[in-house]
Amino acid sequence: MASADAPLSRDDVLAWPKAELHCHLDGSLRLATMLELAAAQDKMDVLPAEDEEGLRTILRKVDDSETLEAYLAWFRYTLPLMQSEDALHRIAYELVEDNARENVRYLEVRYSPILHTEEGLTLEAVNDAVLAGLEQAERDLGVTTSLIICGLRDRFESASLRLAELAAAYRHRGVVAFDLAGGEAGNPPKHHLHAFYYARNNLLNLTVHAGESWGPDSIQQALFYCGAHRIGHGITLYQDPELMAYFADHQIPLEICPTSNVQTHVVESYDEHPLPRYVEAGIPVTVNTDNRLFSRTSVTEELWRVYTHCGIDANQLREIALNGFRYAFLSWEDKQALLREVTETFPMAPTRETPVW
Image 1 (spheres, rainbow, N blue to C red):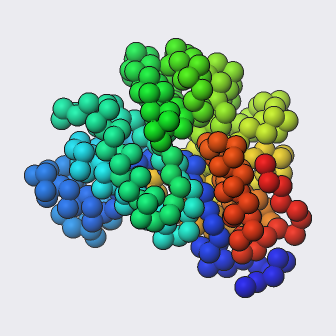
Image 2: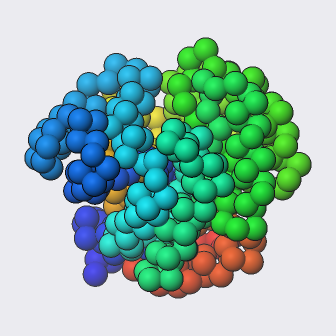
């Protein structure tokens, strides 16, 4: 094992205990599972290819997405396969299994149940199937999981309110937070105030996709209109220095997904990503996958890309990895227990003392 001052290897990062706070269920299927589900459901016409290599080749074109909305259009290949309880259970289980293989100890999965009701499932049936898959994986694999329910920016607020009600009803059954996802352009967070008011008054944690393809105004609305505790992406935050200072002063965490940000052209390359600027400013940064399938990535790979392309040194990367645990949507007691466990076993602890929050 390398010393604290030596360069990291990818195997070092693979061995670290890790947390994933921003991962979409419907963007994280295995290629083999997509093909098997399509065959079993008589939906091969949904897919653009009939084998893994063909799918892999076509899905690489997601890198050419000119906008966030164009990127989101690729979900047309996964959502039709996720309309049954068995499929949802399997996909949730396999997502945890994939994370367990790279030593992810804590995983927050997010999705919008309303997107899985096209063939007659109720919102409750959808959510029960996903939670059952996560719970079985927890028992089998020892990974702690939580579920985040997403409202959708491009739907009527009544739909977001119904999803917030669903999230609140499952608050003691595995759901830890409410989110707002989808294309930002023309769909400001403040149009979903009643949903966030309901979620907040039912003591749910709150996170909002903001500043992913829109400016700091979207982030400000997520924070001050919706009451977000974390911000998904937040890439454009640097455009408002005062707001950026507010994030540092109040230690509001960002859920950054580097590869996804490059694919959607929010940033043009890893080298130009503002993540180092946020780290230097003292803003808590977490690094996440967003969509393991479409970004062809893992938590390990995202951390490694940040280390090798974004000018982040080894100690900063360790702090980023630990932030995934520090800012998890867990109870205080559970978070402290998990932090103590991973801090004590962290293969290459930072040279300075690591706070347990």
